[in-house]
Length: 230
Image 1 (cartoon, rainbow, N blue to C red):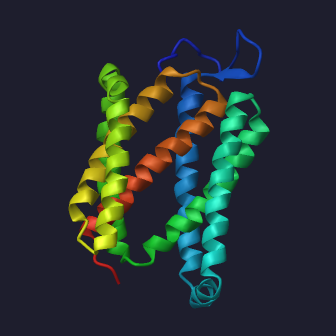
Image 2: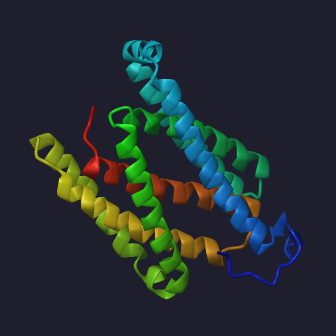
């Protein structure tokens, strides 16, 4: 994925102070591995949260759990941002662990509404989408570099529309399709950014989380479109 293919050793000293550059192969492997770990954590949380005992406990403390997970996810993102800007690997790893655990747990709760067949189908569809738009991000970098502003405006507009439709009790199937399209663009954009930034561990952690958020948004919307809730 990364364009810095001139680095042949697993680690290459950076010319400026602060950490090491990874080889393109090591950087891409770490990036993919971190995304995979996020999905594994989400799957484990889904398995754990599916037990009747957990459902009973969650029902009694739903608000506390929800707020705690939200705060944990935000703190994790902030920690990763500081870790990246200050070249602090420990802070980045801690932020990644906190975010993955809390966001993965929150996301896993949505999976309980669907059958395993629907989840598997949505995962396969999402994998195809990621492959296509990830490749597009590498093949057409200038295009994705130019649509950044359009993507953010479209996402903000969709959030407003969904809030209004939710208050009205209206169907939101068409917004699911629109969100999928927007996050397809974000997948290409984030792949482009990851491929042109310095191949460091901190950057791999940061872009892994960004791509995971892109992918999980596509996955959940596809699941909502094709799945029948239990």
